[in-house]
Length: 246
Length: 200
Image (tube, chains in turn green, blue):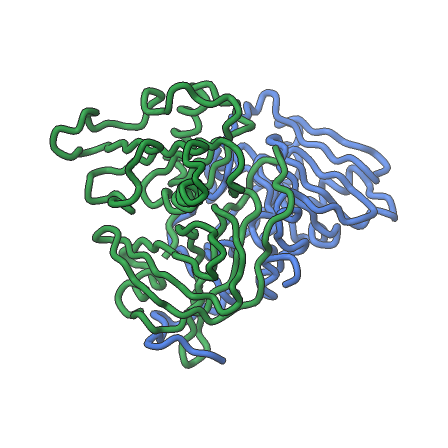
């Protein structure tokens, strides 16, 4: 979620947040040493669009609450379930609780979907650029494209520090995806470790594509410059930045 | 009330924190969705237009020559972080409006940024010592990524109302939703009432 962005472009209609609901945790998967995916069954079968996020609220017996916003990683497939991938932050009150305490069968209070800007409806070409955990909403878009048999609409470039940091490592690689390692690569990886550059973008860049960038503020600035230098008009670039959320 | 199994909360709750917010500590998350603009102060300006007796435009030097005003307190982002005990330095919106003289029919403002961002506020939320245009944070020039050279500051509302890179205020006789407000966020955004989204 964002504090502010420019007025360029309009999103049209999109699903709005409904009431708080009690979701059931039906599956927990480890993505990396610091990230887990939680599959939640929504009793309201809430519809959402790829790129939107949900809020998770924890409530203590004395009424104290803590809540955080997490992007949906799964495709909007009409199943009434969502998958949230949560990075465990060192001092994260909510993320560490989700990682250390929550088990399959627990109930979690959620509300969503949130966001009407950083969304992809699955019908137009898109270039997705994610840094680290910023890949989460982009994975929802990639999964939607593959689910619909229109994987060619999407190109995903994901930047991670080292191989163990890649989310969805068994599912993400494919003809639509490029993985950029900035610090260390797998053995005999063709590209040396280094920062994202225009050389990592799909060639040619589809002139009709919308750019979706998600990552830290520094990454988003750098990726915006890379897409711009690669020939994408700035008004076709949407970026979702995040700072620390615990 | 429904409890979360096993959750007790980590810390005593600071009474300065509105419901659903947490203390971000010394961090200041940067949460914008656009490239950070570079706005040279030599060509920067700020204007008040719309339903006023006297539309006014200030240059960087002119606005900084106005009587200064500081804010010390807390800021609250709708993404659930709050930053407690911060200070900003700038000019009160009251000072700016006094020069432009709002017409009696003016009841809302649309804050506009140099980037094209907009956000709407009731006029009453930016008058009476509740809003500023600020250029210093903790005594230092406001960093670009936080809205420098100058941003609007309306600290009693969620922080998306405090438009970064602000270029002016347009006074209106009706509420005209800004960017986030058209995209599902609340028209007023009072953190103490948790007015996060339309319908809250």
